[in-house]
Image (cartoon, rainbow, N blue to C red; front, top):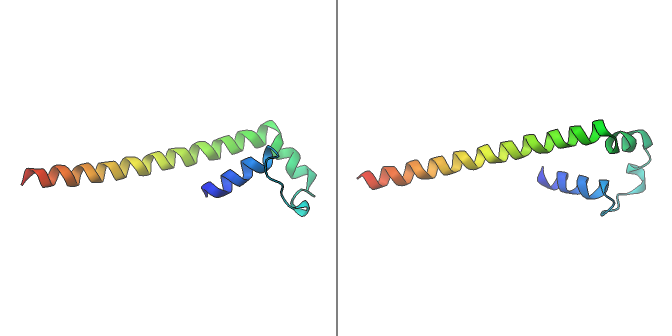
Length: 73
């Protein structure tokens, strides 16, 4: 999923050239470059960042519980 976001952002800012058949839909490209499209992409990016933060939080919590439980014995 992160790779898709990276390729999408690179393609939107013309740093990666997509095949022509993907850009033959001018309405889709116009929507993605407009304020609503960028807002949706920002929302998806924020949701993914929040999900990654929660995953890291759970991982750290499990590690701390394991280490603190082992030190009690």
